[in-house]
Image 1 (cartoon, helix red, strand yellow):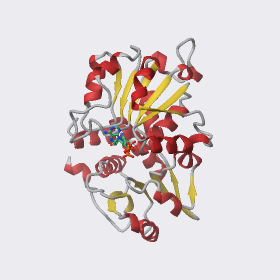
Image 2 (cartoon, rainbow, N blue to C red):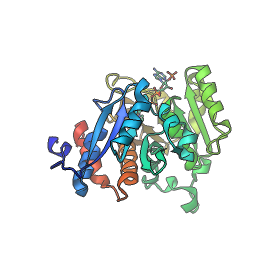
Image 3 (tube, helix red, strand yellow):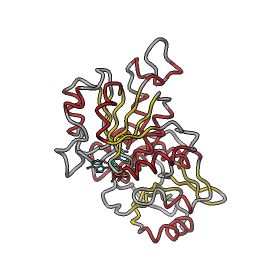
Length: 308
Ligand code: NAP
């Protein structure tokens, strides 16, 4: 595992990629991206950069001056970094967060690959009822499916955008803080992406479940060190249609308590590992203009997480 983390040699020509965040020491992106660079034989290295909130602008100027090719952005800078970019894609503007930045002539440009990462395992699912509407013949289309997203933080924004790209018929977001939930709903009202988003409090969730065919957890409930927790109970899961998908954005542990109960209920389940792989692969392709070695990245990540 360690060998995958270290490039074979660093020379004067070695290019630098990286990730900024605070904290950053436990980021899973360096082992995953460095494994990909090694597999491609690309003369580059992906470095974690701890950057405090007050130093984001200075850090971006420094990364530019040092010739860094591009970088990821993680918590807590995904929103704050946008003001320092010369260009932000319409998708990232709609989501309100940037996680991938690359060099352009006039300055840094940014986009959001979390949306693509979120959607990828749904597209790859292969279940006949889950193919996008454009390619289906006589099966339940996404436009007749209700997606319910639990939580209204940063990851929920990528999930909303992803469900919108899939053309889900209804998109609901469930939150515990009425003011935050209201602001969340208002932030999408003028968006071309998801103007019809609906919000609900947790006590309204049971009424939504019988028609819900995609249930997404974006809360940290179930994440280490709260492995014994779940955003919903087995009784809640019993209310879902039998062809529903339970999708947990948490990648460690895998499976979470939520997904273990969903499996017992006989539902399709997706964990957060693939989203992490796919958002990273999309970022790498932007930086190096080559198809990313997705299998290598998935293996490196799972090895690092102890799942391989
Ligand atoms: P975040 O911005 O902090 O949002 C977390 C959301 O969960 C907030 O809406 C929060 O509600 C809610 N929440 C927290 N504790 C709760 C509780 N006890 N009961 C009900 N709701 C609760 O975090 P994030 O960046 O969206 O990340 C959320 C999760 O997604 C994390 O587990 C993260 O690891 C995962 N994630 C995975 C990927 C991936 O690639 N697989 C990518 C991004 C995130 P309040 O706003 O009311 O506090």
